[in-house]
Image 1 (cartoon, helix red, strand yellow):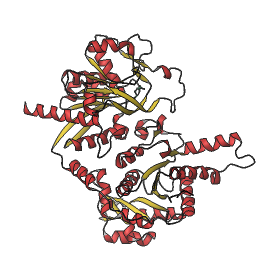
Image 2 (cartoon, protein in one colour; image 1 turned 90 degrees about the horizontal axis):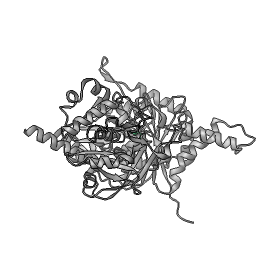
Image 3 (tube, rainbow, N blue to C red; image 1 turned 45 degrees about the horizontal axis):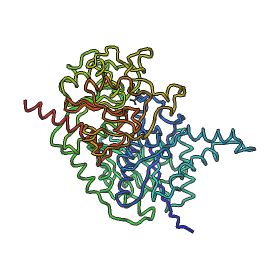
Length: 543
Ligand code: GLN
């Protein structure tokens, strides 16, 4: 019989409040175990009823993170990929919606004939199947499972119950629980308070789970006394009460956890050998973030500026590419509608680069186009992503090719000057969920282009999420007027990248490069954009 290795399961739950950084904790633990040579993946279980976050408003939910295989997933998967430098897939994100969808479809097929279909065991069995699925592929030594929401929420109960059953089945050496809680500092009392953590652990105990490790989020480092007190009240050994105090950057968290030997403690609990960790590259990366040589200012001009999570991967890609260029990227999110009202020069004149991100709908479009015109004419580095590239094409058509009515079919349906039109395969699509052009597609880069200079290879693969594209009818006129089509699908039917020759760095792409930028491996287009912005800033300062 072939050797079947025992996969180890680490569950990460959260207590007290949401937004504690469970995703960063799971990613940091994953990184430390990976750097010890283990093969690790992380999966997220989200309690909401939506099948995926694809139809949610980015204001509410933040960015939709797209994987290579075209799944629209929670933004925590972005953290997992950025920290681990490993590709995630559809199997790494499950929602309550998916679980019920599956169980109800099976009920309709007659799979449960005769039975009453119930939360326990039918829903919990489907959750367990999904929790174990990646572990059964034989690819991983360790599966980290993050449970979304906060312990005590009604909607996360079936996930916690499934986790309890798995921990019982697998046994203590193979499955452990890490609970992330909050230890607030109450300034009027002048002390840190452990009570919310005690209550949160009680909550978990009521559900049948004794946490093995507590990761305590706090403003300042937890004292030995506080750790001991928490340990006493929660049955957690005191070396496993970890202080996860605020850091300058999320990328410092793995180092803070490492210094408290969290990874060693985990390995000891799950009985895996304590192989040496190689943290040097990571430390260099964190040092570069903390001690940059200079600063560049980038304007990100979009629609969802009130919720920065809507552009999470872009913000992170700036950190990665800043570190590679030894600069701090100071990104300001500017409302495209404000550019319409106040004019591009007033809002953009102090920036070293302009990025127009992806987006949907007409609001703010004219502001984005004004901003692009300003960057193009003033030779300010410009990076257009998805809708940002489409706007750059509209701007070029209007102001350089003199097609005054140039627009996108997303905004003007009956217009024979739609330089951006709907993709043919999208015309008949009625359903909104998971129906865009999604996931990784190949792209061929033009010789002697800024795109090729950045990637240093002619064939690339990037992730997409769109319904509209450059209308091929206008390719000739755009090219005749100096726009370079620098990236095409292999059949040459789809424009994937554009640029302008007579400009320090003006590049647009139909795909989302921010989704493939990794902590210690910045995306080439972001790296080059920030490099160009830094050069622009130096030129400006020397004049
Ligand atoms: N709304 C545009 C489209 O569907 C751009 C999408 C995006 O920026 N992700 O093509």
